[in-house]
Length: 194
Image (cartoon, rainbow, N blue to C red; front, top):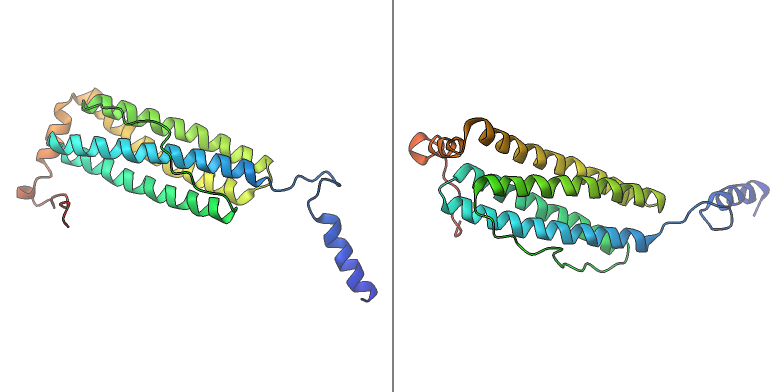
């Protein structure tokens, strides 16, 4: 190897993360643990939101039911992204929900619970992003930061519905449902067989 080649190799070896020069190395175990915790929380959210969807639909509150179904589907996408990252890091996806479904059927209480879940996810994912940054895992840090953006959008949607109920009363939900019936030109929610 010529002098230039040795300098290039030496340059990169000097910058390689190692315990010897004080630069932290990627800590896969920390990232995998946090990613699996996020998977567990997202699974719980999916189960809870689908439960809410079914009961709101049964109560004739279609638009709110659709919001929960749509959010549950988006949370499933989060599970997929988190799981892919776990596998990339050579970990195993545990797929255990972090909490059982709470049997809440009152629309106001449903929205309060949803706001609480999303708020918790925002705090957790911000903290997880910081921990992954300290563990020298910028890609997982970025994934958690992107999830925060989605969770903030969900939080805003649920909080808006809750604020409208507080301002206009629970009749707000009924009026919303009447304005989106098939007779008024709105498309009905897809059936289970579709």
